[in-house]
Length: 308
Image 1 (spheres, rainbow, N blue to C red):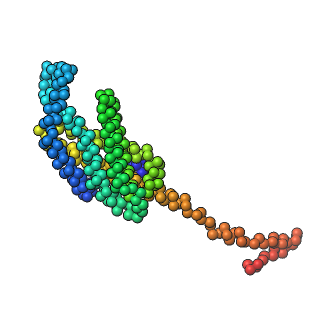
Image 2: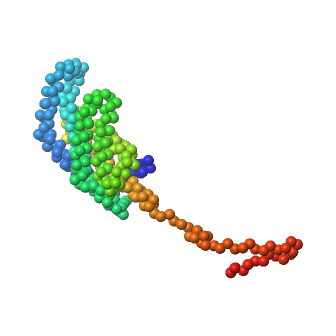
Image 3: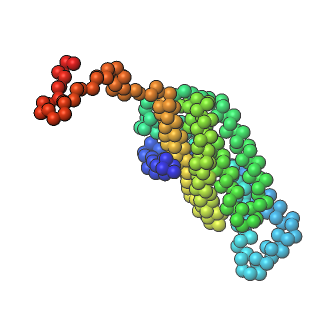
């Protein structure tokens, strides 16, 4: 728990570092260009398709008519854009995670290493190809789980539990490998994950909940369409900072745990130290007992000279 809290506050402090803030603008630029491009080509067709899909259901039509009678006719106009935004959010999250992993994680890992662990040996138990393969596999699994879990979002408690758990698992798998691939060997990485799986998964879940916070910004962008050009980049930047914080948190925690694990292994392999006086005690020759004075005699007992 001490390591978990210490690495958390260190990661939060590092988020204020000018280098981290500057690096967070790179994924933001990429994501803004991507979002603007997708919006320019697909926003209107996507909104029209969702409206047509909603209109094809009689239950939805009855619900819309009821909203108009209750004086909430404006909600009918923003319902389709809101749905489009909520559907596209997981894609933005995944792309932001990939952008951070590609553009920010190596630089932030080197920042943490140079400032705190300059002497930590690099055993290079992973590779860039392995990172790409693992990230792709985990992202596909997370997307499938997210799609399968959508019907359960209608149950109020589960909508607050399932998405953060899925994104937390994804963050945990991606960040742990990327952070340890350069410094730990394969065996060290497996041992460290086995020993710290609970805290590492908990870190992923916490960052998953933090990543859910920008959804409020997305919802505001859907409700206030005129503010979307400002709110959408803001939400993307918040996502980027959340993932940047998670990369720093995992870097501090994993490298500290790796250093402690190596120190414990070195201590267990070192031979036990034998006190120097033990060998001297074993070589001491026992002297015969000194003669005692006769009863009633005032003569003191004989003392052997120091050379005896």
